[in-house]
Length: 137
Image (cartoon, rainbow, N blue to C red; front, top):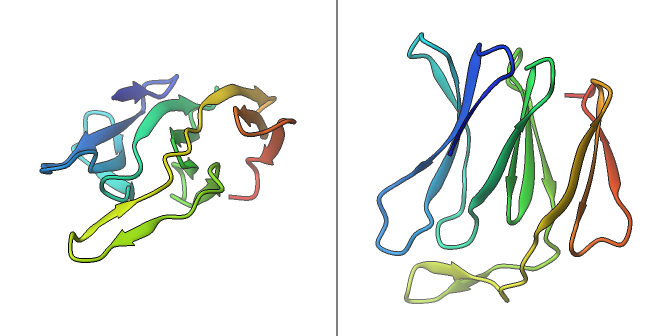
């Protein structure tokens, strides 16, 4: 999964790392055409996977939506805010060296930007949308 910023200066993408039991993903942002990149986050293997990538209209923030979190990254200073979407807890499987969860499915049902400084989102587990300020990164 790869999405270029609106101005084409950056690229947000997901890499699937080798794994016997996927998913095993990393979230990245790179400067287009330079070979320079930064890791936003490595997602917990077997549990979390990327669903969608959004960019703000001005191309200064990338938003990665996973089935567990929102990762909002400012590409100017690389500050990242992580917002939990899933109230479930993970369980460590002793002897197997893997994680599991109850399997609660989270689906992003609404995601929209409010001007250049906020976003509104709602998942299937929420009754009302939440608003997040993008200016405090």
